[in-house]
Length: 126
Image (cartoon, rainbow, N blue to C red; front, side, top):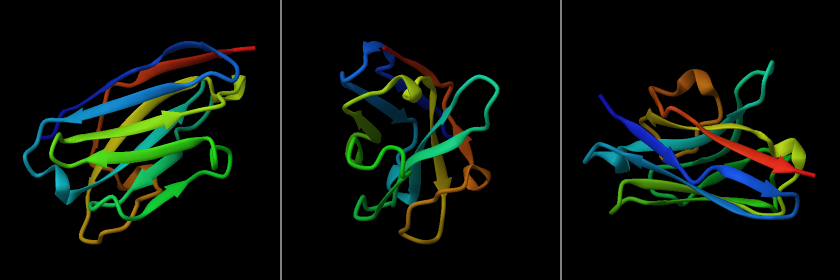
């Protein structure tokens, strides 16, 4: 069982920045592809960004390309999401997920993920 704990959410004005962190309770963190997803009220959980085991390959949703950066530190069992130029439409609960996958590729589908964190609220005011 892998526990994921997100932190770093909060209230920010449009144009501002936040950095989310997700710490994993496993010494095998480097075996897991990691992803950040978000869910707004009444909507589905959608991928924001994903990163492969090694961190060498990343994926971004079109809506966040050029504004968000996903990264990971396998020595610290942590994945990050740097969010810049935030917009009101970025408001959502942000979740990190871990997928034990056989390939060093980012995983885009929430159905593939094995473990989820509890989520952290990000609110962007206009």
